[in-house]
Each structure stands twice: as C-alpha cells, then as structure tokens.
Length: 191
Image (tube, rainbow, N blue to C red):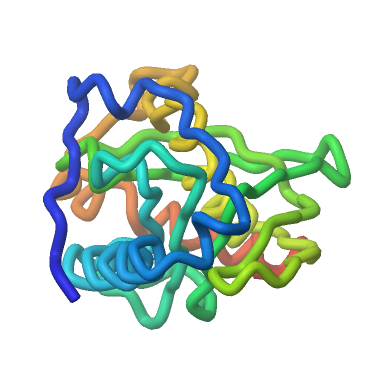
C-alpha cells in the first residue's frame, strides 16, 4: 500500500465531477489496490473520509472511517466504509449546522448546513449493494465526502463566512460550544 498525495484547493481535479465505475473496473486488481491506497492515505492523514478525486482519481469512490480520530475527537465512530457510485437521498428536510474541515483545504474550518437523515445507496468494494440510513453527524460526514465526487468543497456550502476559522482558533474559541452542539445532534438523531 502507498500513501498518495492529496490534492489541495486550487487543483482543477477537485472541481471535476467524478465518473462512475463499471462492475468490471471495480473488480480489477488495479482499482482494488487503489482502494487500499485510498484507505492508507486517509489513515495517514487522520481523515474521517477521503474521496478518490482528492488523490487525483476522478472516479466515484469514497472511503469513510472514524475511530477515535484525533482531528475530530467529538465525531461518533464509523466503521470503515467504502462507497462506490454512491447516491444520497434525503429522508427528511431537517438540517443541522456542522463545523467542517477538509484534507484538501488545509487549516480551515467553517459551518455547513447538512441534512440530518439520508438513505445511502452504493456498492461496496466487492460490488455488493449497500442500502442504509445514516443520521446526524455521520450523515454530515457522508455528505461531505460525496460532495467531493461532484466537485464541491465544504467552503462552497459555508453561507456565513464569519464562521471560517483556522484549526488553532477553532480549538481555542469555538470547539467547546461545538462539542455541546454535537451532543445535541447525537441526542436528537443518533450518530
């Protein structure tokens, strides 16, 4: 496995729409090895997720995993999940505000409004169908990663630019209040 370079804001690849994978492509040794590299890169960077397009492969694949993540100590754990050709469908119009950051937008965070409950349909890395519901903070993570596949960065969804902050200033001034907000979201919608 290899750690891949992560594209940074300004790289044209981040503004592309990723293409869907065929079943034959997904089954190939090349794509299976790439998925291993994507997961390794996500772990190396302490990301909660990573989209293939963020490592300059414009294909519809994302990896998501949260396990006591030091970058996001308040996020509920999510087992390693690979989504291929994901489709997200809102199950409710309810939303919550989520402070987000991104490996492709280093040292910046901002508040994004996210849907609270979603249906996730995709294939796993072996081509088996995934059809599940995600809620709350976890739903926000899924939306953030799938946005990448359509060329959207979290900063495109920040409506109040006064919420933009560096990681250090977030930790100093905003994290305690946000942790309380996360608790409220988890109480209301689950993880």
